[in-house]
Length: 411
Image (cartoon, rainbow, N blue to C red; front, top):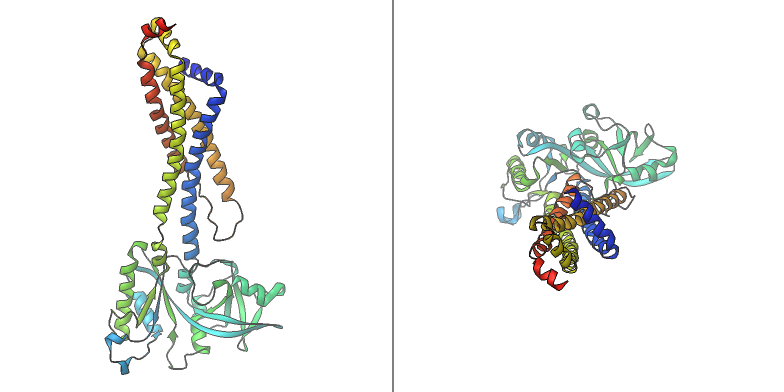
């Protein structure tokens, strides 16, 4: 085998131009398998990151108005959630691993001479966990803040910059509708959200849920209104079942039909994400890459068939001197596999380098970057091996059929 490999490499050196062109096809095809498949994974990562910035596996429920088909038109009253509805859902929901409450308001925020009209969110620790927004500094809203209705806030990244400026930070005091609040935390930058309600998290200001319910009460009731209930769905494959469970529990609390989606509105970004054909796109990228590699394999096959044709007399002489058909077959098979192996390894190195380099670029949030996985490299090498074997079979078979007597008479 070693002699066959040395002989194969010597043959490739003797036909450098043809060998380099064939090597390029295999190298580019193998690199394409790694890059295009990694890019398909990158599209999925980009989409999930964009949709999950408002909360991973997020579900949102809000109270609306009794549906027209469930009550006479004169009795289509408006509904709302209160804290007891939130607690009941948290206790009974089995398909949601976290359930939190939010109470929303608009407020005038001032710091020194700066003023902003801000999206104020009253949140509890569970809602913060569902949203999953990391902190850049300070601390989140705690249960103790809720219990004592503290006047503390956590600012979004953009709001911190525009409202506080370089002078303010954690520990600063701001005013919300004239009331003093202490900044106890600052969110890290969230960036572009593919799913949002009202304003981006970077522009929001978060305070304890009970504080917002106390200081910005609903004008139509004395109850502690919860504007929206957020929940994290335990399994993304169970979106419909989780929504049905949440609606049934809340509908029972409100005394409406569990099929009335106007009375209890529910939305999950997962539904939008699941509509994108991400798996199909990744499969298409893989097919395109393998096709490219297959074209390179055809180049190898063509080159080796030419080699067999040109070396018929040499093959005849070898066989006349005692070489077996198996030795001739092995010679051309090793030559074929050597060129595909060299091209494949070079292509794997090139694909890894491209994916690794692009993955470290600073690009806008919605630009997908290839994801480099060890499994992709193994897939590329496996496909390259199959191409090499497939491209080596025909030339080896043609070489084995050479009749030494005929070739010697030709000589």
